[in-house]
Image (cartoon, rainbow, N blue to C red; front, side, top):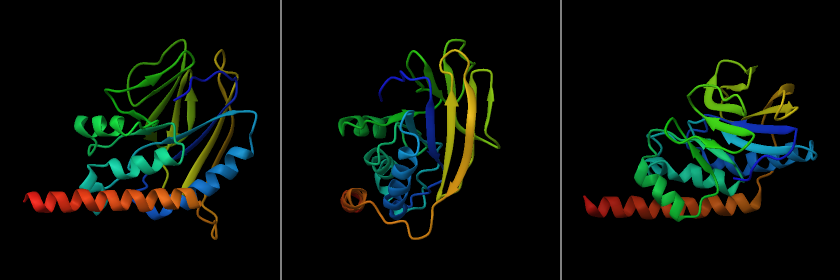
Length: 208
């Protein structure tokens, strides 16, 4: 994940995707459109958790890695990882050269201007974006909380005046427009992820 060097930050975020790989290609198309609406800002794509669900077959087969690989293919910068993603899963994702920062209570991400975390005290020098969802979107000092969303929604938050005096200048919650066309590259990535998950599932069945 690249360091933040501009004064305006555009956050696009999702939550509670619950293993719906089929949704990702259409979300990718809409996210790209939203990024183009604010070209002067540095855009971060974030997920607040719930990307996988244990009852979904590919989530169980890959220990939560399947959706994270999909988010990485979409250009996400960071995701709040779920209980499915243990240290062994983290190591496998690193071996796949994952660009996505995996954030939980034990693994924050930070640079000179920004900190992504799920807990901990405010940082006096950096904006802290909490990736554990809140009931509403608000900025308290240098801590930004983002509200919970449902699958098919994208939150858009614009932060100005980084790093000295961060302020929220825009908040919009979008529903994925009907008829949004799927991104073909992400569709191909999803097909690959499904095939790999099937391979893990067959391997687990053979070991029983």
